[in-house]
Image 1 (tube, rainbow, N blue to C red):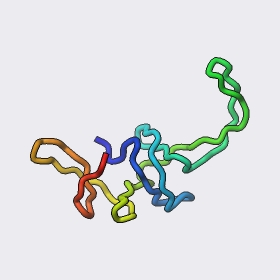
Image 2 (cartoon, one colour):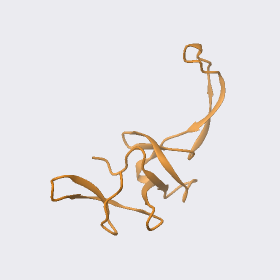
Image 3 (cartoon, helix red, strand yellow):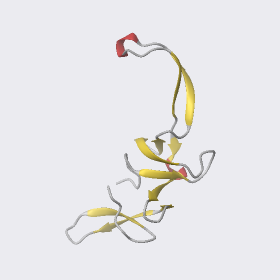
Length: 104
């Protein structure tokens, strides 16, 4: 069970994009791709089978998962994530500071 999942709102806590918020688009091992953050330009070849034109394409590059925190909209800050087992046996993510359950 990951602390950060696809679709979560995160805030970047270090680096060039510090303080910016975005939604997690993809997770690969210890890296996350956040929407409209860490944009890089890549030269791509055209691929007629995928109907993809060639040229310079701007896309998001992955960021290490340790450089982002889950964003708590109630407090307006990034917060650490813990786990709690509910009475019915479900394991849920919770914010460490307040203890409330993360909406997923």
